[in-house]
Length: 292
Image (cartoon, rainbow, N blue to C red; front, side, top):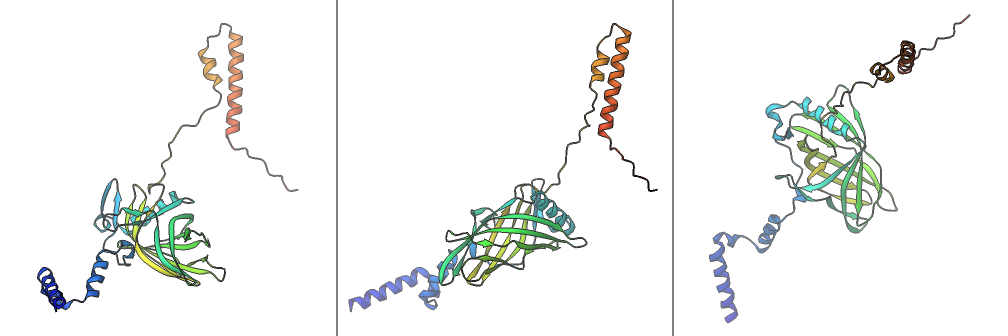
């Protein structure tokens, strides 16, 4: 009897603290709501980008205000060309602050019947190929894939970077394979919707979606940042005048000569050295044999 009174009192007190709406909420709903609030940003779903933010000259602004899609495409070409044959770092990031939370991205998978976690912490750019007449860029990417402390053999991903318009930039691939089990190969497909480009420091951010099919299967979504080693500005080599050979001429003209004959001999020697230097710098044309 006393137990029933205690249960009734606790229930009334809970209603008084939490409000009357709690009467229509089950215990499972309360728990699931709590878990949803504490959910990791790695489960951020793939979404359409409203406006792409581009940073240049230490200032960031939406690209649609003062840029064209061709300008963004040219900037991305410079960025990837400057970092060709180099490694990009990958990190799980916060989509609001665009700061790294982990030094990798991870997603749950199953290798056969064994649960595992797949990690990607870097991507190497193997080749950059331009496509004439279209706002697309072909990239050969090598993803550094690991799972449960193992590194499988993976084929390069033939990816395409597509700048459709000022608010639609997509990096995708038809799929690459990884040998995760002794039986068969696993195919991995990647979609990366870009919404942030930093031309000053070489950052690219966006929402990603990875899916696996085969002996190992699974997938996940989230927000990630790519960190490239060099910025997106084209190279500006320093122009220098070519070094002239025949430096003896300066020394000869600056040294006083007491004897006129010695001065003439040194002048002739300097002219001969200068002629030989010019002859070495110029391209020698060999005559073609005449046909009889």
